[in-house]
Image (cartoon, rainbow, N blue to C red; front, side, top):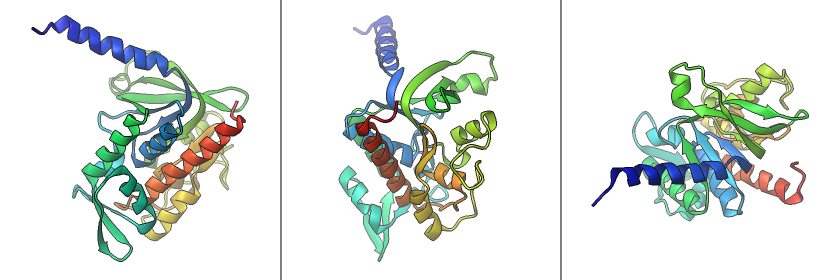
Length: 262
């Protein structure tokens, strides 16, 4: 016999336990696209207390849709080892070009990340950052439905030793810093330089090169990295996104191990 009240109690109680445990973090990642998920996977493997906040119902970002809703993605040789590690089937198409099913790639990465301790809260938007002594020390969150309904409901704060902007083309946290603090980002202009037209060959390289700290305590990864530093978009090739997530996780892990994040 099932009791509807017990079902409700189980959901609310377990969610609140997870949520309360996530108020103080090692790493808060904003955006559950491929770069954010990969960063979360790598950090969770290292035993870091890491949570991803995603505004949409679904996770996976643009990877879900493959290319123009054809649920296939392309990766290059350098990133094939990542999907191999995750247990995602990869098939060589031509020399240097590898194909994977986009649904399998997203679900495989997500399953392996959560299995290692990553928490993901979907339907939550980040509307501000916490700044203390010119350093990002956390994020300010609200339900996505509150923003969609344009309701005046005050948010809550999440503290984090390090924050990652993995919000994709919109690079939302970088733009928040630019808007509220001024042009103090670690770019040539001091601000968001903007995404350039599609060029996969260049974009796949620069997305990894541009994965770095852009303001004290704030890193950028994935397509947000190219948007901040003026790199081109890449289209439905996702190897660079995975490599970017892996790189930002490595940089943050090394920093936290040195204890110089506080």
